[in-house]
Length: 483
Image (cartoon, rainbow, N blue to C red; front, side, top):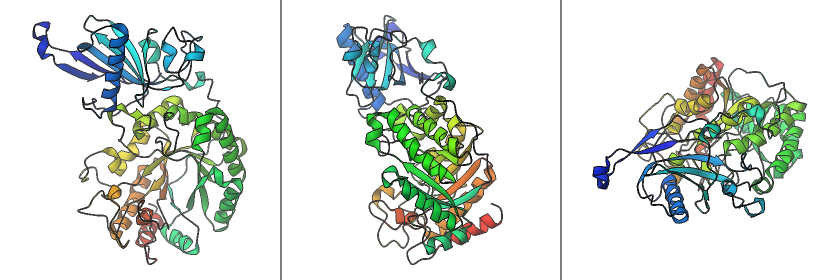
């Protein structure tokens, strides 16, 4: 079971109980790592709110005073299987309550488990859903030694053995995400030294649309990467059945000789994955089925795990019902065995405002996803030895767009990225990533999108208003020199 323990200790003597000081230390985590920060005791911190909900529920249920405690631990939890010690009990949040049977259990499967130690050194356990709406006070206590063991993919009956024939590591190449492979787009991409064309294809568009993209892209002399996005509602209703349906879709693309397939897009946020079901383990369950379906018909198709959106939005908790920080999600994937089901680990980088060699100085602060190397290292730390594929990498420039950058994307209002800097930064990113040796692919986000407000995709486009492409020649110079 995945665990992040954060221990709160009481360091004041009983003589000075009215001036209790609570200290915090981090226990070495096993498989799920949140940001290495303590939750702040503010009304908005999700962990603190969940702790209060757990403490209040225990106080009411057990009649114990927990205003002062010796310590409290918590971890992100998955209750989708029955309690191993009591398989006759309900799965879900109530599987730790002995009086609730299978039929009575609430269908709540993800949240935090809290263990709170009273001043009398008695441990109490409660579970709180990520949305804070459901709480269960446990009388079947978690055994720490059992739950902190590393995940064993081979022992997980929900994950099939990976099919042999993984695509071999390849040399660094670049490509571009297109809205359509027009003549202008082809000319720009050839100038830039691009060998790959990326499309995002919803399953609702149908397999024939995928065939069309593969055939036309190959005819133009490019390799094709298709990022396949599925149906959230169907996935939420029946994950196992939907995974098979999704696998059938991507299998057909592999049979049609798709060069690479990305399995989903940004599955760590609820814009792309069902709310309340977001975890690297759940994503890996779908990835495994899709990987085997692809490799069963075309071992040379490159399978790329779905790139998470780079974010620290979910704070010290690491995950809420609405999503997970990308580093937490990647570590959850690794713990679930995702490395066995991907040739390349998908990543995104699209919020940079500084050169790709920068490690500090961002006007927003020093969060790792602001910097290219630090962002990359979040993937390589979780999957050492695996190649990384950037399926979106871009720099937003509002120059020439006719109106101000939308506020939500205006990350450097006093020093916005110019078109010349966009070209320089993309070329620098290609050079830097090629030199690292652990990057397989850099897909430029994007080539020829035009929309601007509220989502400024046109500001990322390397073909600028008027048809110029300064980034094309800059990238071409880098790629012609071998990176």
